[in-house]
Length: 236
Image (cartoon, rainbow, N blue to C red; front, side, top):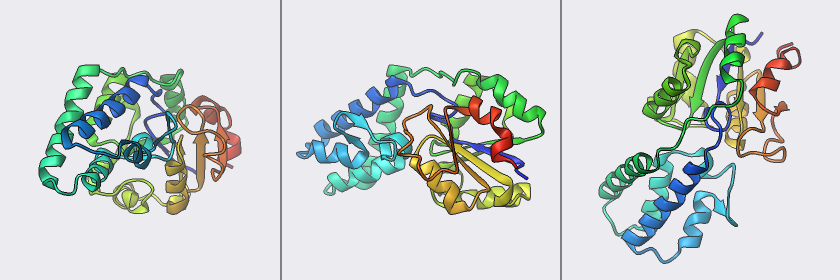
């Protein structure tokens, strides 16, 4: 029996805001300009921006700022890694302040999460974002009272799809993979569920992934609202 629901954040609980796309592209442009990078197209492709679209499995769509920094370091190897990391982190903060991306939640989010809580499910957010960004989302979305746990890339150094990301979570809550469903919109979320052997691995089409991207999921629904309605199917 499934007791825990592990929801990805961006694209699953939070609608994709085009502002984040602009921030990503501006970040690349600033890096190329500052560090005199000659191969901008290959850089974009390695970060998951190909033919003017963001790949659902790419770093920009489902990775972390650390992943971006690692790619930047590869393209500017002659520069001090710590300085480049410091510059990128500050640039990210500056661009978020400048562009002020909105917190636009999936329609029906509050009612659906509350309905799950009324059925005695525990709810966690599992995300490649850091703890600060996750807590900001929880506050802005007004779901503090509905979230039992936050599993982020900055907690123990692991990130999706590495199953080690949830080892501390198992111990803290005395839970096993057979009691968990993961819900996400990218191939990385699906692979996380498979690697961790969760009881149910659920893809949703509310983010960057399409059905072809999520083909390895046990179930695919339009969004978390349909996921709730189909409870009898995934929690047998």
